[in-house]
Image (tube, rainbow, N blue to C red; front, side, top):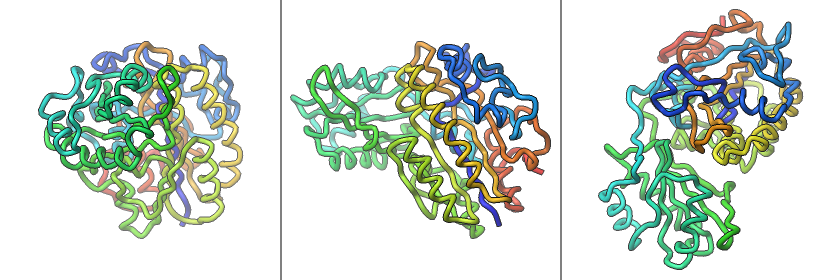
Length: 387
């Protein structure tokens, strides 16, 4: 048996889907805008065919790409990480997770305060994480009340200064929110602990100590399915958080893309069979959400430089799939995710039905294709791009 490696470059979109206007995301094109604004070059991904998927100013197409290439349409409603990863793993949703354009209703805040012992919360509105900390950080440090906020995505986020509220307490509050508050009609995709440090005017989010508390998947997903077939499943990065700690034999959490790539390469040297699901988060967390086009480009260039070593570490029968989970266009006014097609690179291309893949009608085609890679009958909706 061989190994399938699935790498998610978080927030990497390649153009607005047809329904993007419903989400206010018309005109979004994460990779297109990043390359156009920065002129960044991605020579290794270019060799695989990333410039063949859509026109990219600084990454032209190649005549004979090394991978099969295409793009994928998200079928589930929504544009958050949980929805994207779940659909990649074979779970299609028929309704979006709840969102809160006006902040959380009083019943949610009252329940959260009662169960956590807080006398109140600050903010309670959709906001950029860095902006809301700048706005309410001083008052939080004075009163000890947590900063609670959301975004266009289905998230309940709690930000606390680690010198005001201990990290353990922040995590406890978020576990309470996940298990006892954000349930039923308020079952958001994720509760997120957002620790920060510093003083007014110089606050800094501690992204490496962030923790996501995902809703449990509504049905068994690809990692569960493979695990039950006796295939070892390994999570690298935040993947396991998005599946509520289910479906993986091993989980390697990371603090950066560099650490994620380092751990991936270490795993590649040590296994000969299994499934490895990787999330590289910095494109989204550090740059997309902060409208940092230059930073996004730099993160993509760093990933690109790692591609030759990743390809060299592949076994003769291994499979590598590179994609995204949604868009996060740093060139758009919004700091939220964007409803976009995602890129699809499948290496080696000879495993695919053809070099240029038709646009996939669902991210779930990945779950179907990985099942076919292991010659397994599967329960997932979709069609395979692997013979």
